[in-house]
Length: 102
Image (cartoon, rainbow, N blue to C red; front, side):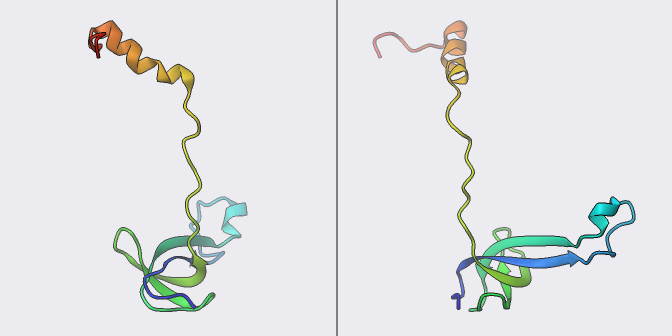
């Protein structure tokens, strides 16, 4: 059982297979349109139960409770050495550099 206020992820089927738009490719039309959404649980609920959350944008969404939302693991990667030099080089070319004494 997860407490109200927990940051969780819900799942729901937005459109079942066969109810998708006519212009959707055939291989896509045979699958349901699914949604996963994260938000703060509005009332305590157990795993797999129907639950409601309030999203970061303030929407209230209902779906099947998948569990606590995993943290985001993406990043921008390591710095690119060639890009690190651009700022100082541009400032030097424009004469915006700091005095050598600093």
